[in-house]
Amino acid sequence: MKYPAWTRALLAVSLALNLGVIAALVLRPALVAPPQGTAAPAVHLPDYLALTPEQRARWDGLEAPFLHDLSANWGDIRRHREALVRHIFAATPDRAAIDAEQAAIAHLQAAQQQRVIAQLLAERALLHEEQRERLLQLLLGRYAGEATEEELLHRK
Image 1 (cartoon, one colour):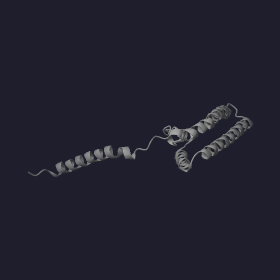
Image 2 (tube, one colour; image 1 turned 180 degrees about the vertical axis):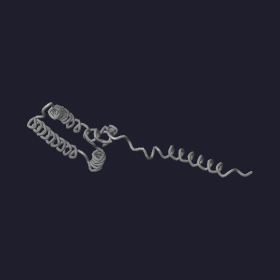
Image 3 (cartoon, one colour; image 1 turned 45 degrees about the horizontal axis):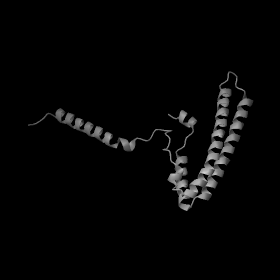
Image 4 (cartoon, one colour; image 1 turned 90 degrees about the horizontal axis):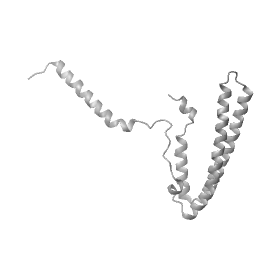
C-alpha cells in the first residue's frame, strides 16, 4: 500500500521530533552547568588531608585563632561595605566619605590577605609533600570558580 507524500513527510517530522526530545533528555545532564554562585561542597580539611593525630593537634591550635580573627575581620569589612553603599546611594553622595570607606575596606582586605598567607604558610609547614599537594589542588580549584557577590548580582 502506498502512502501519500505528505503522510511520509509527517511521519519523518514526527520521528525526528521524537528523536530530538529523547536526545535532549539523555544529553541534558551533561550539558547543564551548575548554577553560578553555588558553593563548593564543604570539605573537612583534617580528614581530607589525612592528618596524623600529631598534625591534627597542631592544626587545631592554628585554626581556632585564625578563624576567630577572620570572622572579626569579615564583620568589619561588612560594616564598611554597608556604609559605603549607603554613602553612594545617599541623597547627596559625599565623595570624601565614599573614599574613606573604600580605603578602610582596602586596608582590612590587605590585613585579611596577610592573615591568610600566614595561616597557609603555617599549615604548609606542618604538612608533608603529598598533603601539601592535595591542599594546593583544592585551593586552586576553589579559587578558579570564585566570583564575588557583586559579580553574581550583575551576571545575566
